[in-house]
Image (cartoon, rainbow, N blue to C red; front, side, top):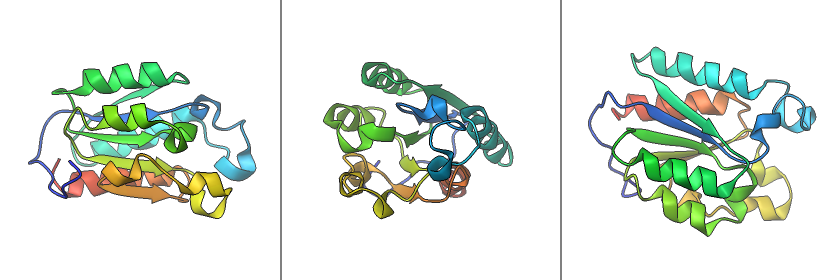
Length: 154
């Protein structure tokens, strides 16, 4: 819901989506992305949601089509989406178009500060439809995204 409104509290889970290469967290460029793994990210998200009595579902894929299929399946089943689209942030109109289908709040997350990196990383197809964007907080950005959503009653 990029109009700035957020739905009332729901018992539906928050979907945490991770795009290409995020399965390699902990080994891929630890000087940029840290030493935590994707399993650490998911556990952090579970704890952040549980602090509000809520649950998450999660999905990671290196395939744009698989991510889009999972987003399509989220329609009517999740209360919000936290997404780190990885490199698809800067390239995928198709992913952006899919994200509006579930009609739920979206928070875009990036572990590194994409604005302090290569020029191409400064453009996001996702940001204009997101309710919030978190970048440069390491994996704590995921917890911040969930906190943002849950304190706004999704």
